[in-house]
Length: 231
Image (cartoon, rainbow, N blue to C red; front, side, top):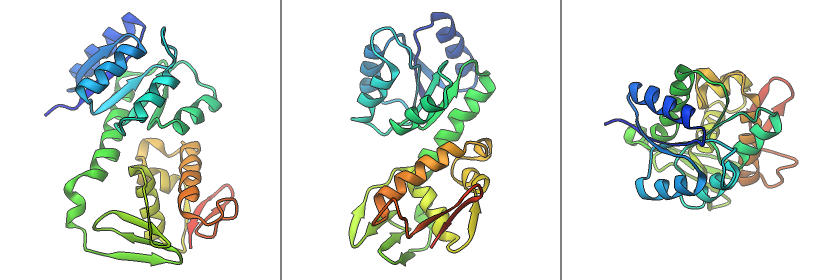
């Protein structure tokens, strides 16, 4: 079955072009030309991925992203002309799973969509049921890999799929310094090995959830300019 996409884009030419090329790539594509109609269609159809412009006529993509995140964890790819690094961080911080700057080729957009689908739905799929029932513990942290449950001091911590995957890679290599490129490749995919801002942002998310004092971490350690080490 084809993955379903919701494209929220106010540029009529770009909207139709992307709908055409993404359909040719094997996706089912629904379109919306503003934020309000995009939200209505998202509520009604529950797409697999939302592709969201930021500069929309009725409300900003920032607001659409915030409202959508209140009701769903379906992956969001922001596709926008805003290319400032602060905008990229803002988009990821608001809950976007990826951030692409226009113009973008159909091949790159399609690859990014596939990567997000593998990353999010692959992590939530049934493949984890074949993993041995292993419980990992270190200091205040415990991970049940079979149930995909993380606890700190006995209290369950809710992690997003990306946060869980990042933590899993770190703890499976406990004590080893893992370069930025390795972590990005393992968690996001080989197309993301230069996206260090993504990694820094999600490490900060993890620290807020599992560290006793995120400003002085005792679990996830930074090696400036190189990577991260757990334990």
